[in-house]
Image (cartoon, rainbow, N blue to C red; front, side):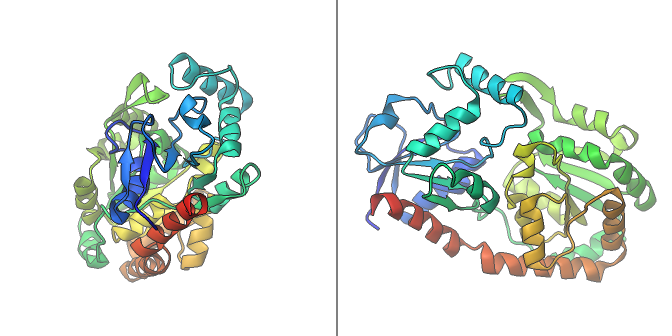
Length: 351
């Protein structure tokens, strides 16, 4: 493919948000394409993110193809009120222009007018394909995170074991759903919990009503609050926390469509970090766990407890889980495969 000049409406001004640096920026840097922020320039293609003003005049150039990188499941809102409120809030805050309507309607229309849509899971693709047949599934690159051999596990299991959670605060309330299990296992096995995430977050639109992440966790995990530690996210702090951990967890509130339809990125990261990981049965996690042949899925509180004890009591079982997960990564989530998928998505609109 020839070198492209790509106009980009990103998720973050700095291009350092995970959805920027692990996706388009990763591919463009690897392939030597140029990214420009000024959409008034002549470009070969425009890439829009979820933070774009879908009604901007920049997207009406009929001769310039548009690729919509739709990472989250905004076509599946939690309820009509939440959907309408999100659309209204984005309009009032100036993030989008045009008529007042549910946010999913903005997203749906933009999918229809885009030359191609990129999403992050087959589950999302099934929904998006109803509005654009040129849809491509591409996960994040995790090259910035070290690939760790699980040899550290034996030592960690003989010391005070730690449980690792990583992600954005917006998904952290899933731990509340398994609080009874965490409380029981923490006291039985003398566990500590490390949460590698932002120390604070905004409750609405990443802009309004600032909250403390540690304060939220202490409220939701009151009986074991003294065992909870919040570590500011960085790739180095995540690796350091993983090297001190025994097992990772990804509990999810599956009643929230946005959470239920998230891709498998976090599970793959935990395997990359050399940790066995337990998860809620979201479609992506069930699909990947079955393909990898791991025992990661916890369908109820009993299974959460049973699986925690199995990993904590049996180092050989834990290592086998990691080996299976890392083998999956080598075969299904490697740099070459990701770059090829991005190549195909752009070739579908610019030739």
